[in-house]
Picture 1 (cartoon, rainbow, N blue to C red):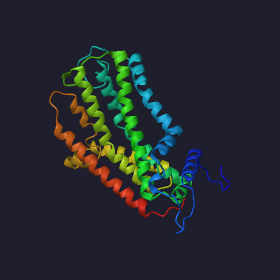
Picture 2: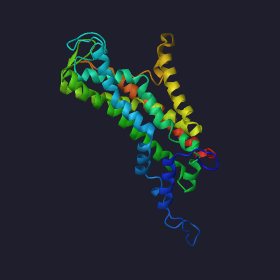
Picture 3: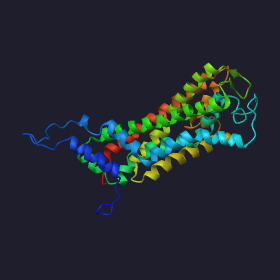
Picture 4: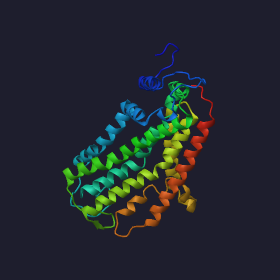
Length: 308
């Protein structure tokens, strides 16, 4: 607790101290700070180490690793046949390791994965404002565009780490419990194990790209509020609302413009006849939404009055 009654994050104070020590405040003949280089401020390595030390990051990554084991326990407690070759994705989850990975991505795709991305991006600027450390970062001085860029890159790397960690751990757990069999689709198509690994890689890349709109919206909300919970919650609520609207068939073709409409287009990869048009539409939708929202966030942060 600081003397003024404002809560500060110890990691944030450590970062500010490190940045201040890097930039020795010495005035030159022209009054400028001697040796100052904007490119040396708020280095990515410093920001990543700081984020990795935070308890929320450790809990998120820990839960991502734990989720496949929870699913295995659920199947062990319940009744499932490892030789099943028909049914839905849940019924086929124990058929092979690739099927188990598909289930893990399927059950996490509607809520958990968007929440993870929203948490990393929505908390990035708003948390600095809530700790009253953002104005000190800018006073070092760190250019505004660099603050936003470095924090967005760090958030993106952490999000990708979590999104990649889930299928990797699920594959390892699936190999131990269910073996390296073919990937079986609900339509009965069987994909060899070698090709199924490529499918998992492509599906993971698609999910990362598709969640770009969540990252952009979370970043926009993060620069617009001093409440991290509001930024994260707003992005998660937007994702839930979009999913609800996507279920209303009365909207017809309007649903195609919802950011979550193509969330599960990657499931088409688990078939002999892949609909690449749907996958391409999902990539385009995510890139457009993500780019527009990120540009709006940059514009908002560049013109915002920083008071905390």
